[in-house]
Image 1 (cartoon, rainbow, N blue to C red):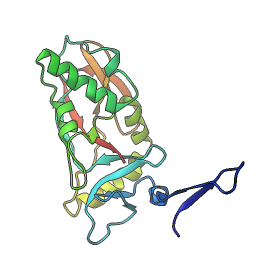
Image 2 (cartoon, helix red, strand yellow; image 1 turned 135 degrees about the horizontal axis):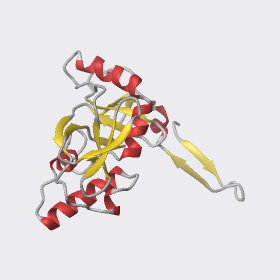
Image 3 (spheres, rainbow, N blue to C red; image 1 turned 30 degrees about the vertical axis):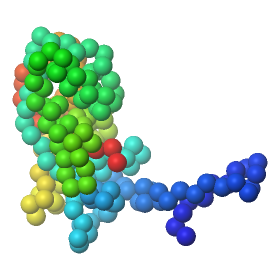
Length: 199
């Protein structure tokens, strides 16, 4: 019947059925489509929106990126923007900016990013830890992005630095590149920003 079934070990008359077997079909470097299904190749009639980079955490990276500065030097958001969760970091950066009249273009870009099948607020700016997971599968993910770029459906990643949403201190934030190098750098520098989606 296409359902996963879990039976209670103490009472076999009680069972739970789950229809999310499609979730097990997503693999690293699969194309994620707007209906949240995955495939290693393009599927006629489906719109690609991302490439999967973590099948365990179910994270996918956007097909597009933008070059932006992290934000203003001399402003420390603090612990709420220094977590391993890019989603939480992005929210904290935007909240701090709103409360203090500061525009954080990179966080806004990721938060406002949307595609067919997603809406504003679904995507976010990945943390240093999430970017390191992406860097582990960079070659496979970028190979898929290059294939999509060749038909005008994506922008592939280069080996340059990518800003993460993880703040370091008042003047610096973390960047990561394709070979898992990472370091802090002045927030005023412009590097690539690429949103991610938990699906």
